[in-house]
Image (cartoon, rainbow, N blue to C red; front, side):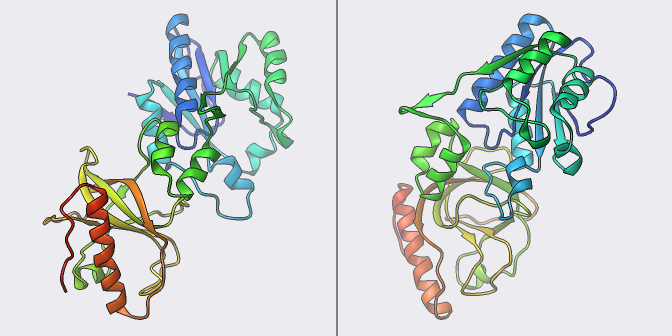
Amino acid sequence: MMRLSRDLAGSCLAPRGSVVAVGAFDGLHRGHQALLAQVRERAQALGCSPVVVSFEPLPRAFFSPEPVPRLSSVREKLRGFAAAGMEHTLLLRFNRTLTLMPAEDFVRRVLVQRLAAREVWVGGDFRFGHKRVGDVALLERMGAELGFQACTMPAVQLDGARVSASRVRALLAAGEFAGAEPLLGRPFVIDGRVEYGNQLGRTLGYPTANIHLQQRVSPIQGIFAVRVGLGEGECSWPGVASLGVRPTVNEVAEPLLEVHLFDFDGDLYGQRMAVQFVAKLRDEQKFDGLEPLKAQMALDSRQARELLGMNPRLVEA
């Protein structure tokens, strides 16, 4: 089982030495997966621990004056680390204290003292430390002095371009889920726990399971055809989902994911649910009252059924 630590200081987490991957790892796309696989293989060859160092909040979100979309929640990221075979995750709090730490101190305190690193693996454009002065060259110099090797992972290319989180976010924002899937190495999914809502969807004939995204900023908004997984099950149950602020009724301050499962009869409150986005139907829009909204929901349901290979039918009022 993977162990998780949050503290910058403390005893050594890898007494037999470690091979370390360092990065933000938003979305754990195929480039990240290749890096973690390399770390796991090298750790096995050296007889030490595969370890990942990451940061929360994401560094780019910490510095941005505007909300920054992210591809994965903290829970999803940690689950991905465990699936990749990491024995320990050091998830550092990205705060003012960390941003003021000189790059040399990060190397000594985190990589050497905390993790007993024998190899440190990063992307070629990796920067760290106060004012981002730390880079691969600094890691190489300090590694030669302190007894570890700095290694860079070549970028993973797909269709002639580098796989990156920004490329994935752009595809998702454009509704190109089929284009994003090969970069992620899996379909795009948002998961969470179903919470109570105001049951307006039930009143309109479309009961929904609601997932609050909390502080997470989604890279997508609109109306979508989806497949849903309940508990630990696969995403196989068809449905239609809205992700947005509900401008027609009860507009909410933070985006809400509402999912209507087709032909489902059961209680989902409190359950974990994974929502796989298959296709975007339209942008969110404000309607002049509940009747136009209800009519559009029927059309959305019909279109989603068609896209998901189901019998298309309109649900009559």
